[in-house]
Amino acid sequence: MEINIGVSNRHVHLTNETWKELFGDEEIQVRNYISQPGQFASLSTVDVKFNGHVIEHVRVVGPIRKYNQIELSQTDANVLGINPPRRQSGDLECSLPINLIGPKGKVSLSEGCILAERHIHMTPDMMEELHFTNEQVVNMYDINHKLIFSSKIKRSDPGTLECHIDKDESQEYNLQTGDKLYIDVENR
Image (cartoon, rainbow, N blue to C red; front, side, top):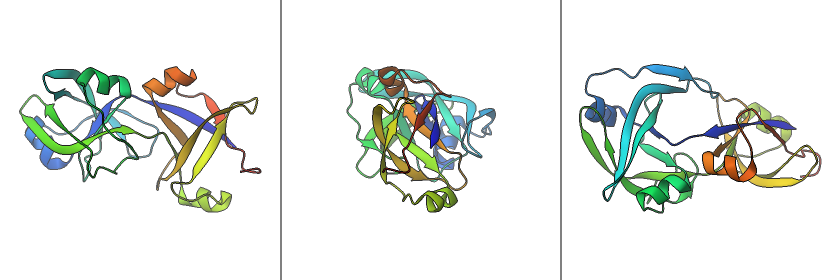
């Protein structure tokens, strides 16, 4: 089964409360829609800071969430001098604290900074049809059946079938957005 690759750059997801602290009464505005239904890169960015180290202009991804989450690559974490846990999106308990700076204010979060685990977005219908389960680990291969890496299935409803990797993984595996890998659904 063929799966498109999507390379994810560093970004943040914000709650309404945190958005207001960083951006005041400004409304979140769409810069461009991304592959997963209803999600978008906004026009807004924040600076991410830890112990005097800063990464500027980190994109806010919308829509507004029920949790604050900062997704970095290992290279980004090295710049900040931190070691966040590698987790699935939304798994934030005991993740790292981080500071965010926006045009209208600053926020110190007690947790929320992670390295996002690579994952394959899959709808519940597709999971049922192909006999996959949420968080199941599957192997991904190139066109020549060479094992590239393993990845977890992530239930996405709604969702678009796609494997998300970060920029470091993009470089490590020489993969770009739109490239294809495969899951062997017959011999898994």
